[in-house]
Amino acid sequence: MNLNKSYNIRSVGPAGIPVIGLGTWQLTGKQCSQIVSQALQLGYEHIDTAQAYSNEAEVGQGIKQSGVAREKFFLTTKIFPDDLKFKPEKLLAAAECSLENLGVDYVDLLLLHWPDSRVPLSETMPALCELQKQGLTRNIGVSNFTIDYLLEAKAHADLPIAVNQVEFHPFIKQDNLQAFMSNHHIPLEAYSPLARGKVFDNAIIKNIADKHGISASQVSLAWILTDKKRIAIPKTATPEHLQDNLNAINVQLDSEDIAQLNSLASPDGRLVEHPDYTPDWDN
Ligand SMILES: NC(=O)c1ccc[n+]([C@@H]2O[C@H](COP(=O)([O-])OP(=O)(O)OC[C@H]3O[C@@H](n4cnc5c(N)ncnc54)[C@H](OP(=O)(O)O)[C@@H]3O)[C@@H](O)[C@H]2O)c1
Image (cartoon, rainbow, N blue to C red; front, side, top):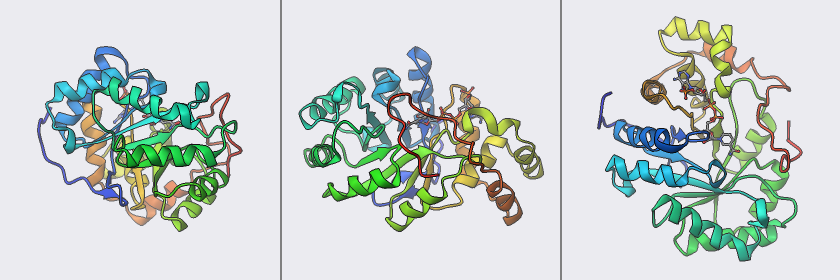
């Protein structure tokens, strides 16, 4: 592996979110800490975790193992709505618990993982903003929020919503949400950007990859990054894939590729739902 290489990774929005990050869902134990450490040493500047992944401690160990200084990378975690944690009186303790598990003094981005219809955003958003004001996080944001939830969140926040992290890859339709977010200057952070492996089975994506001599993963990531307000957080447990995914920042797709990739979305392309918290999606 090519260690300590410096990449010129573009960042998005006032929060300065590096366009490629390492997703860590399903990474556990030693494998998690090792891959996080390798990613940071390789030049990744962005790591994404969540309380619900039960791996914040291992992510924290990986950060320590890497020897990379805290201010050199962007760290995101997410508070899960179980146990009514979006109630103001519980939010601070939840955030403090994440910082303790991660072994850091602050995160760069703290997200509400899914909308929770049981707790009004008029209560949660001021409390979330307060966490930024107190320095536990540098930025706040949301995940899996629809247009209606975003409107409500914005109405009750006196700080910017740095990002909405949502499912995004070539197979999912997110046109209405994207148009809204673009108009309101909210960057889109693409989770499951490789459609959890589905991109590797698609003939059109394979053809584009062969044409340019690149991987299917790079095709999907480069396509996501054609919009300068988008960020992608592919997950990998495989060291070679770390490099492959990071190299996507230098891939140039042509207009024919982009048109073909734009045509792959369908109404049934969504892969991720949550049994308790799935909102009424926009598309
Ligand atoms: N906010 C939310 O509700 C939410 C929901 C889902 C996900 N997320 C975040 O988004 C991240 C990514 O999404 P995801 O984990 O669902 O799926 P994903 O990143 O779309 O796909 C991961 C799959 O692709 C494979 N892969 C990665 N790079 C590869 C490469 N270069 N070549 C071949 N195979 C490759 C991985 O296998 P290997 O491990 O073997 O490389 C794994 O099987 C998560 O880890 C998490 O951080 C957030």
